[in-house]
Length: 101
Image 1 (cartoon, rainbow, N blue to C red):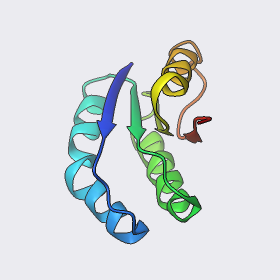
Image 2: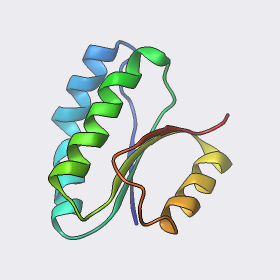
Image 3: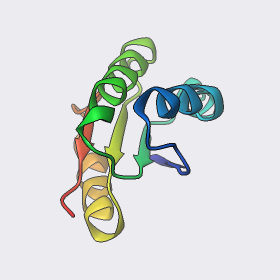
């Protein structure tokens, strides 16, 4: 599973979604198109970011089936634990998960 680290998104949800799609969608789609499963690691954000993150995960998963893609918000050990779990959970795709802090 390829991990793609997304950093530096603005605090405002609409601006964050725009920057995500402008700067990060291409490398994510290239990896999926090359046959890799992808875990997108995002910095934690408040609940106002949930909808665009869920939508991005779901749309990417639908477009690139059977490859798996999940968006994960978290840092440190909790992010590593989710990555380990997803590596061994072949049925999980299209999810936005928030790691415990």
